[in-house]
Amino acid sequence: MSEQGPAGGPDFATGARVADVPEGGLLAGRVGEEPVIVVRRGNDLFALDGTCTHYGGPLGEGIVEGETVRCPWHHACFDLRTGGVRGGPALSGVGPWEVEREGERFRIARRRSPAAAAGKSVEGPESVVIVGAGAAGCAAAVALRDAGYGGPVALLTAEPDLPYDRPNLSKDFLAGTASEDWIPLKPESFWRERDIDLRLGARVTEIDPRARRVALAGGASLSYGALLLATGAEPVRLSLPGGDLPHVRYLRSLADSRAIIAASARARRAVVLGASFIGLEAAASLAARGLAVHVAAPEERPLARVLGPEVGAFIQSLHEEHGVVFHLGRTASSIGPDRVVLDDGSWVDAELVVIGVGVRPSLELAERAGLAADRGVLVDERLRATAPGIYAAGDIARYPDPRSGELVRIEHWVVAQRQGRAAARNMLGLNEPFRAAPFFWSAHYDVTLSYVGRAAAWERVEVAGSLAARDAAVAYHRNGRVAALLTVGRDRISLEAEACMERGDEAGLSALIPRASGARANG
Image 1 (spheres, one colour):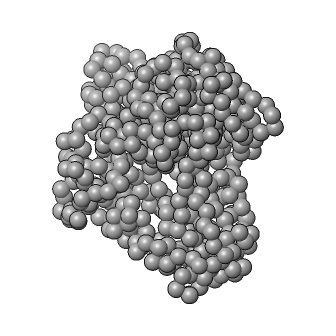
Image 2 (cartoon, helix red, strand yellow; image 1 turned 90 degrees about the vertical axis):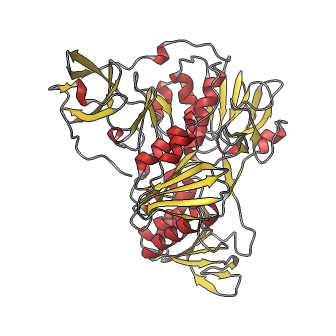
Image 3 (cartoon, helix red, strand yellow; image 1 turned 180 degrees about the horizontal axis):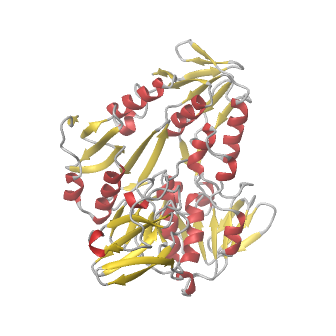
């Protein structure tokens, strides 16, 4: 969890020159002590709060793309004119400011009331039911209200907790650097004030597409005009002796993270089975809590299949610098009360075992409802499933990737949020194909990896800069173009790559890869 420092730059309350704001760009400054950015497009000046509403990232270090400004940390996207959310992971907009033009100078004296998109009534279905209150479901509910939809919105979750920030279950919260009161996405009042019927502990048991009804455990049911399935994914569970012992944990929910935190207080040694993103983030967090941590995984390098051998080696060395011990090329054959036995007969002592070997989409409801599914719920470019009025978003949605034309299913928090927004807007007839470039971030100690695009396979990996120096851009080339870009310490390049992918600027994307001294190509 990070925050900006004190606001710097010119004080717009005392005035600044219009020429100081680059055309099509932004100038970061302040009004008193509050960070504010000013954007110039032609003769128009726009001013917005300079702090992202997601994690407090500095918008002044972001980029202007079209009618939006994007945060460098996690790529939240805001409307220049209103400050409203145009893309996740933010759920709330940034405040706009009134700009007073005085010839070749301008000043900012006061805030402006956000343009009330919610004040515009839009046509839509009789009611909306959203199954799942994770990233996609929450973003969809908020997007409906932001767009001016006034009909009933029910947001259903089987969990007992308010919707929460799932990425931090393996990051700051598990590491002990973020308190639990920081984990809910929004307080209960946020949902109530937007007239979103958030129902905790509401498990959907059946969907009847013909009657347009969902049945809940306990016998209740709800009708819908439009339905969003956002049921997410479940951890892949290992079947091995001792896998059901009480000190063996999976990490997917807030309850899981709480249980691991409680167990870590009683443990000195932990074993993580699986070198997935969540497994390695859990390893980093447990090491931060002072546990001796071992990671066992079948691959030769952690994450090499996803990110390539050089990035895998960098991640491994980063963890080893913090005392994590790897047992690579190994799987667990059994788990005992105080040890994990590996497939070569060796063992590792442990009072806590965390299993992170991947997830699978939660498709049971969709399949029982007769929706077409193939390794995910099949949807079109507007996220419509194969039954009228039903949409799917997030980890369960298999959708056409606009860059490759392939059907893909992507398990990223930000992708889920953006799909939820897109599905909601398409429910309202806004007819917006989902074209957002996939993006995720992964935190390991004080190093954050940012990844934009998708490269399930590649012909060439190009490394520019130095991974060891935490300053690098790694391009994954496939079919003659950059399919994905990973950055460490180069947030702006990551943002620019995302923008190039979304507007189809392949030449601009290729030009982003620095050909600086030290860049080298690896097959």
